[in-house]
Image (cartoon, rainbow, N blue to C red; front, side, top):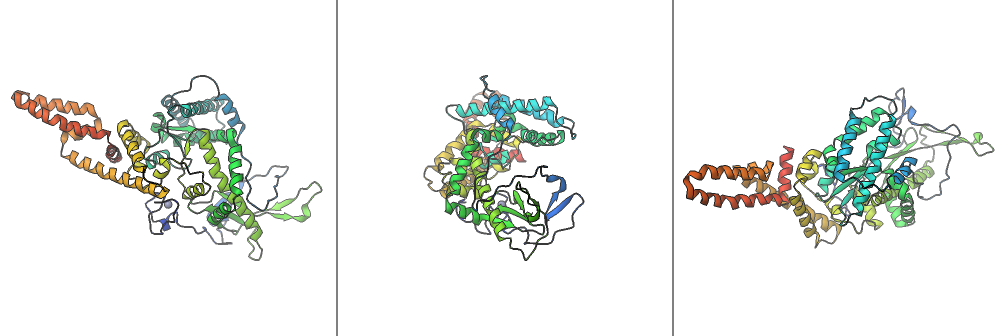
Amino acid sequence: MDPLSPLGRNEDCWCGSGRKYKRCHGNHRPASQSGAPVPEDPDDGTYISPGSVLAHDAMSIPDGGAPLTMPTGEPTAKPITYTSWDQELVAVAKTSDPPLRPRDLGRLRAEVIRHIAAHPADESEPADEIKQGLFYLAAESLRTVNALAATDPKPSILWNEELDPAAFIGRTLLLADHVAMPDGVFEVLLRRGTNRSLSRAAVKQLAIAELIETGLVIPVPVGVAMAVNGAGAAALTALDLKDPSLVSWVRDQLIIEGPTAREALFVRVADDLSTVAEKFWLHGHIDAESLTADGRFTTKMLQHYDPGYDYGPWIKQVSDDAVSYYVQRTNERLVTADVFGAEFVSASMFEARLLARNKRGRDSGPAHAAVWADVPQLPDLAGRELVKVIQNEDAVEDLRRQVRASLVTARTPGERTDALTALAHELEGASRRLERTARSDRAWQAAVPAGLGVASLVLGAISGGLLPVAAGALGVAGGIAPYLGARINARREAAYLFVTARRSRR
Ligand SMILES: [Zn+2]
């Protein structure tokens, strides 16, 4: 699949869901029509669209009022935000002690999150020792990632904020030496979460504990990146927003729902990984009478949709905002990956197209092509199963070698993706043949799950049993050994990874 060319409605969706495009990401209709009736409100919230309720305690306005920025009439970069903790982390991470190796850091993290997951979950604030522990864990994670990025030769570190890490590793054909991802547990701490929300985030991270323990996946405090180089993200955004053709392309991708019955607008973009709007806007009615000498006034929101009112200028203003939001989001992800010495690999078709247009995806590596390739088996593995597959380092090395070789002649992004799809299917086919021939061979079957140790035991048993017939035995053993040996060598071949993947899932 070429991420840059349009997809047929009946083709398989680009996200790998297995559904037809038209029934998955190809649905570009807004979720409701303007002013569509909403259900009756619950006691503690207000329906702002037929499908979403705004909880009453979800919105607050400071006593002194909220500052207002006059719209400029065009998309503009927004201020970059990060917390003082993020800034503090950068300083703490700069100490000169040698950093932990990924595996040691991973074991430490697994231990800490197991402790937090088991911690009594109540609505109180986490204890200082927990906050401190997580803070230092975040700092250590930064130091380890930093050291990895400075290693020569530099290991391949990939960055994606949206996909499940196991699926991400599988979809990128095991090309990543490490995957860095946002640390959800630390984020809860930054949002001043309770013991309950902290423990929930820890349980979620525990789902990939095996990947973390092996040092393959390294959660990092994501806000740090903006503390380090938020200015870079803002500069890239300002540059992009100066390009009229880029802006008008992004504007064309917007899918706007509303104004709803409660004067809200929900905006998403076509072919983004998320199929729901990440942001919504509320229409404010300025009460002209309320204007005071120091420039304060009141606005009313969540009013009823008025079919006679011209919402046009407001919708234009919101689309400007949405255009800059989506352009800035991708630039922030790019810069974040860069700060961690990682390569940003997007799993969103919209983003891939945006990066092709602003030329920032130009020098992308094989992982970018792999993410759009059709890779059987590997992306469906859970953490524990994936670790089993990846432990076979020789076969992983062979796979990477074959990936590099298959990309040599491919020039366009589409050709690269096709080459990798062909390779993955070839390996899948080879792995089935490997399994089929192995099925008739008891010795080989024993060797597959347990490794070489078992194979030599099996050999020993055969030659032991045949020993009484002396001369012939040696001949038989001599005949079998190279035969089995050749099969065992298969463990070094990439196809073997697909055998292990199938077996692990059963
Ligand atoms: Zn889809």
